[in-house]
Length: 79
Image (cartoon, rainbow, N blue to C red; front, side, top):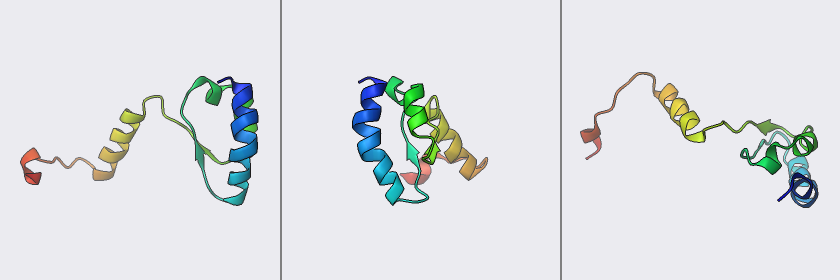
C-alpha cells in the first residue's frame, strides 16, 4: 500500500472522522512506510498521536521494569 492510498482510503474516510468523535483520544500506528511517509504524517497533524518505538518489545520491557523499580522476582514464586 502506498502512502497516498493509505491517506485517501484509510485516514481521511475512517481515522480522521473517528478521532473527531473521540476528543482526547490518541492514535498510534507502527513504523511501516505508508505510516511514516510525510503525506501520512501531515494528514495526522490535527490528531493526537503516540509515537511507535523503534523496537516495541524493548520499550515495553523498559516501561514495565520502570514501574516495578529494581525489585527482583524469583521464578519459583509463581509455581
